[in-house]
Length: 130
Image (cartoon, rainbow, N blue to C red; front, side, top):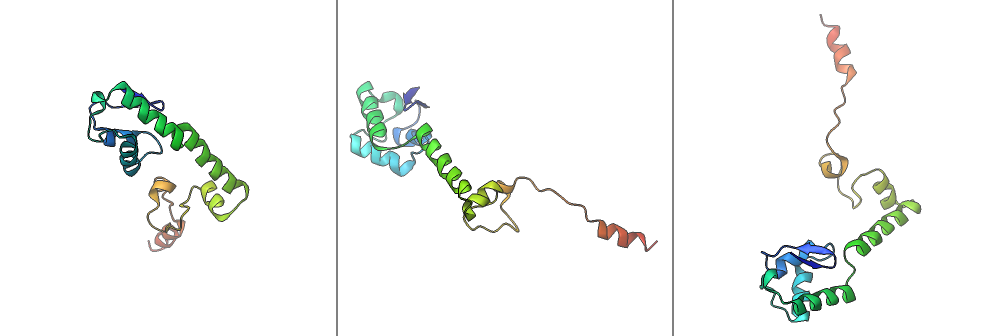
């Protein structure tokens, strides 16, 4: 396995599909990296020469924030929103969707599994009919 920016990239995949394993690089950015460095995007990672790997790694380090640096920046942005107590920050604290999605139904990814609440009103009403 090849290590680029501290991330092991699988050998059996083509370069353009292997680069998105790095946090902060998606498919379109992977295509742009291959184009700008002059490396064939459909070459398998195991077929890359050490010079090509170095060229890609230097290009990524020079031009993009990826992995730990990007994660820290995202966390710092969320912390700033929480500190200034804006609407988005409050939504982060409550673990609810931040960008205006509905929460009456759906939002299960953010809210977690359902917490069923037993209603006592039905039981009391039903007990009197005996």
